[in-house]
Image (cartoon, rainbow over all chains, first blue to last red; front, top):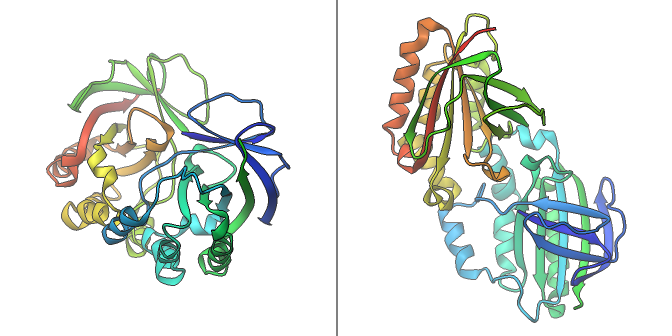
Amino acid sequence: LFAFAGGWTGEWKVIRSRPVSGEALPPVDRLAVLSGDARIDARWILRGVTSYERYVTFDEKRELAAKQPALGRPESTCAALIPIRKSSEWWQLAADARRAVLEDSSHHIRTGMRYLPAIARKLYHCRDLGEPFDFLTWFEYAPADRNAFEELVDMLRGTEEWQYVEREVDLRLVKED
Amino acid sequence: LFAFAGGWTGEWKVIRSRPVSGEALPPVDRLAVLSGDARIDARWILRGVTSYERYVTFDEKRELAAKQPALGRPESTCAALIPIRKSSEWWQLAADARRAVLEDSSHHIRTGMRYLPAIARKLYHCRDLGEPFDFLTWFEYAPADRNAFEELVDMLRGTEEWQYVEREVDLRLVKED
């Protein structure tokens, strides 16, 4: 269990917070990334769990394992936290239909792979926790890869999969100890 | 969110509680099925959420929807609660590998379908909640279908999928208002 706490403390300075679809998150100055049930004074706290892969195939998993960098690289002083909620229409699709939209049509996994190892990514699940979002995706990259990151999110937002996104907030952060 | 509370109250009388793999659950007389965050004095409480389908395909979903009865049929005075935890080996498999074991090799969905509508079934997910089990499966059936139910669980326990089950408890219940 991880907690993303928006407020006045934490090593990440929030440089932008923008609602892409649906309701915004209350504005905050800093973000703390905490593990477990840590208690912290914050304006909001979003919780999620790292969980097993819902759609990734054996071949994709092997390729991801080979290319995916760890979080916390010293040069990765830029980050993004993108909380997303999908529509009930999405969740009512059968598993094969969701995979078909996510990858066969939208190339979500393939597109993310193309930006590895530059753009590190970690997915937290929160739908089953009764949280306001279904997923929290965390990205880390170096300042030189800022344009690549914009390209990646723009590409994903143009896909069929994104037609099922009913709430999305995009927070950009820089590391400031 | 649902809660299965084992203790001294509830409409279901526990007639048997047996560890199939791993640790048993402390013995209880009765079981209450509660929704939400209900507070109750109990010996143990297992929580789970009804969630989206992880493996069921479009065709299977349609067939299930056509055959699956609702819970709470008056003649269904027998029930079973089967909490299961799978091994970390299972959870590290890619999504397509898990589906291949679950259905192509073990026919989990197909086998359950053969016992519809006699044996009603509802799956609760709890792995991402940090619970002691990954799933709670609830079955309801009439006394005349007891043998069919034994056949169903015996068949599933003989499959490749069940080699990944590291903890399983089998509770049998009868309705007693």
